Amino acid sequence: MVPGSSRSIKGGARRSMSLALLLAGTAMLAPASLNAQTATTAPASTAPTTAYSTGGTPSAVPATTAAITDPQTTGAVSADDLTPASNEDYLRLNQREPTIDGLRLRTYNPEYDRAPGIRIGTFTLRPSVSETINHEWRKDGDTKTNRGYLETGIRGTLTSDWSRHQLTVTGDGVLQNNISGEGEEEPRANVDAELRLDLWDETVARLRAGYSFEREDADDPNAISNAKEQSAVNTYRLGTAIERDFGLIRGSVGIDFDRRTYGDVELENGTNLSVKYRNRNTGTLTARVGYELSPALIPFIEASVGKSLYDLREDPLGFERSYQTYATRGGIELDLGEKLYGELGLGYETYNFEDGRLGDLSGLSVDGRLNWSPQRGTDVLFALSTDLNPSTTPGDAGSIDYNLTNIITHQMRSDLVARLTNSLTLRNYPSNARSSDETTWRTGAGLTYDINRYLALTGDVSYERTTRDRGDTTDITRVGVGLTLRR
Image: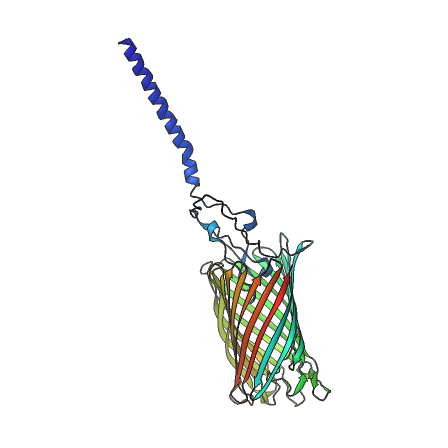
């Protein structure tokens, strides 16, 4: 009896020890099982950045969104570079199934195919130079012309890397040189700078400055007919604004100043025609108030008043074209993250000219910008704007121009991007005006193939058609191919 009892006691001890080891192992494995459900930490190169709304105001990004902002377009979304979609793999709680053979997946790095830029102190400069060869076919009524030309483009972005405040400078320029046929060259340039000052208590100040150069389009109603070279248009811009959040209420006040000058027109007989009577200064004061229904939905109302003064009180025909502007509009801001954001405003605008013979110019104003990314690698831009185009025709005040733009970019492969652009411009004159209403439609498509992160091959084709209530129709077709060097 004693030996049997001894074996029984030893067996019970072994079972108790096994049960204890099993419970201890379960307790050690439990935290690992729970941690397996948490999101995988993204690499350091994909740290979340601030997403920007249409107006450049930083908007809060949810903690679960790893927003990746293109450093070349920080603070704004342009027509050429749209913000890429974030990598969904880093947002998943349950990661995707690994490969069958157990090979490691390549780490996602959104910067791997982009030029690194040039570091200049606390700034990063991202320049690019392009050279394209193009051909243009033009038809004005029954008159046909064509030309071949080289187009050299320079583009760059300079962005600060400060812990507080931010300075961003963007610029681009195009120079054309005809190599065959005949046609007017169309050089242009644009430089803009914005300094954002992060002040106190949700208060932000913005200081802006800019310059633009272009050659007046021969199709413009104010262009000189039968000119060898149209007027050079220079625009200088200055602006400042203060934005502040009062809890759910957001307010801003800004003032903008523009000066526009026109160079001499070169006529076919070799003489120059001065059009300096078109030079003018414009100042505008704008106030805006918005109410935050939610972080993604902010309705707003806006009002502005402005004054435009010409250098010469009267033009050569004796008309006083200086005017005052009054505008009001209401709209809504939408911010659903990088997938969908923008704003749309609808209002009414009035231009009161000092010369009573010109009358008033009034009309509906529509302005807005919407960015949509339906899927990773695809970006869609819709933009609306309303502008005044003062006239030089005797007795005509000018036209109200409505512009609609749509740009779609799609990343077909990691090194191949396709573009599709469409725009529509409606130029409306008062019913009693001598000038004719116009409609201009433009469409184009292009491809960019990245040979490597520094060199890209580009190809573009476009078509433009302008119809007038009175006058000939103009058709322009362009094709081009070139190289872009990035740093």
